[in-house]
Amino acid sequence: MKTKGSMLGGVLLIGGTCIGAGMLGLPVMTAAAGFYPTMGAFLFVWFFMTLSAFAYLEVSMRFSGDVNLITMVDTTLGSVAKWSAWLIYVLFLYALMAAYTAGGTAIFSNILNLHSEFNLHPVMISLLFIIPFATIVYLGTAWVDKVNRVLMFGFIATFLTLCTTFISGTKDNISHFNAVGDAKYLLYTLPFLVTCFGYHTLIPTLKTYLNGSLKKLKITILLGGLSPLIVYAAWELIILYLIPTWGDGGLVSILHHNNSNPAEAMVKILSVNNNAIRIIISWFSYFALTSSFIGVGLGMRDFFSDGLHIRKTKKGRLLLASLTFGPPFIYAMLYPQGFLFALKYAGICAAILLIIFPSVMAWCARFEKISGRYNMWGGKPLLFLTILFGLFIVFADVLQRMNLLPIP
Image 1 (cartoon, rainbow, N blue to C red):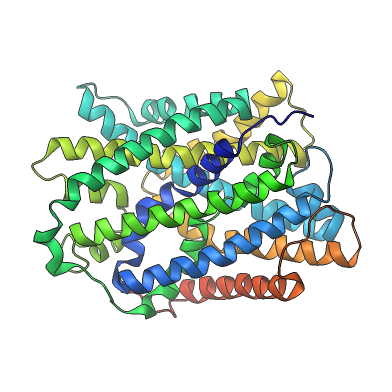
Image 2: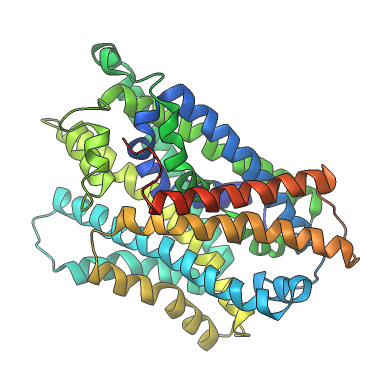
């Protein structure tokens, strides 16, 4: 049977899904910890998120056909876990989609203001932002793949332009570069970092896209997961050189402005008296966020298709697109400044859904001897460590909400 998609397309889908709203908020969340401790945290979270992704792949490969999370949980863990997965998945993905919608609408509005003199109503701007992507997800994976490649090309081009532009000016800013900081502030950021490496909901879709080729899926997951790690490190380095950590207008100050969109705030700081930089950063933010928006939307569409048994006919795809994009649109209208709030809310759901569930499902599938073509390397010891990591993230999130973790 001929493979439908390519590994390059899969890598770009994973990279695009990760490199989105999370990337724009990363320097704001991690600045106080310093560059080197933050790099250590990136590697730590990336390692365990990669393990949980391979656990997700292991479970997915034990099922034939176009099967998503709900069927897998129901078969391996039972009906109680299935309904728990339903609730957590919807909360998690809607939180992400809401964050992307709120943040994307703000960025898109900024771009429109740069290139035109029209004053559009916020509802109209939000619709102009959402409808093209909802249409692409409605059309299917092949269209998402094509459009995502364009978005990722735009992201890479604007990112390299920013790097080239800013590197020449970093010598003047080296005095405020926060290299070491205080690692105790990383505990506060861990649930957020998990969402920044979260692409696992795409794995069942990628399985269909790559026609179940295990070798291609493993390579795609590994390379796709590495791409955000590299980009995050470069972005963190650039922002810490360009914007001071402390003081008025610093990254910590942005963090404590609850009504602030970090992307908008950083654009204003970096583009003072330089309209060209403002335009580049605005488009860079747009490409970064929309590539994630479309990837998460695709994964959510396939989840609803499996969980609600909606066939992908024309009417079915229209219903799936409405379920995927409608509620986030309403959120963006009711709470347009909810960018960071929605992402913080997603942390505990991500830990349960992307780390604990896949690892426990893989463990139970082995005990129940559900046949499959692939077992994650490292065996049960690594599965157990991954489960502990997920529980640790949940615990950190709870402590954060109780204001028991150090916050800069």
